[in-house]
Length: 233
Image (tube, rainbow, N blue to C red; front, side):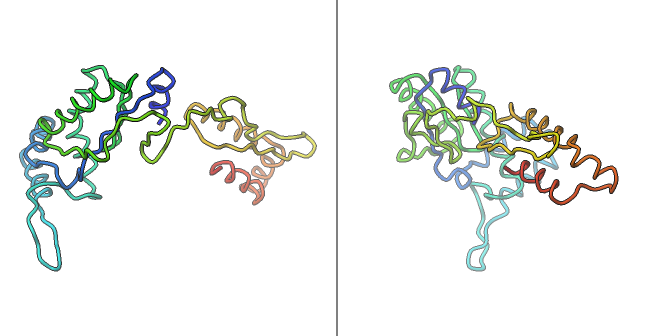
């Protein structure tokens, strides 16, 4: 998400949202295994993966073979989807596109509607011809970043007040009362993780908590609640 936000700030306000129709159900075993064999030389492991793909499905008590697709939600499926779509990543990098992908969900950011439509056409051809995947023309679209959705997140174009003003994380209001002031954290970018660490460290050094820990070997319930509240806020 941070990567998409950076691209938008760079002026790429059009999003090419390509929807892969029934991705896990339509993966070609031949195309996938050819990509897997580039990275794995052990024939026994390749045979095991092939058997995993062809294991079949049970419908109304009867087993049906699976000649295409792979089990969605299976432990191996996310890895296999990344192996298959690694070719897509490299193709987009070769073309110089700005994009973000998570499993089979990806977006490409461009500077104009016209550029987005050209990218949509060329990437659709690549996916269908090279990777034998089906693009859903109804759900695939080129839209403004403010109307796009990626991994169920939307981009409003409004600045988050957290970015403009530093929250009071965990800071003692007075050395006499030692009552911490809890700030309201709406989101937790990685860049702010260090400041949260500093806040927690300051709370642990608070005279209300540290002597209690030294004397009893544990943090009292009210102080622990403050730590827990800040961790999940």
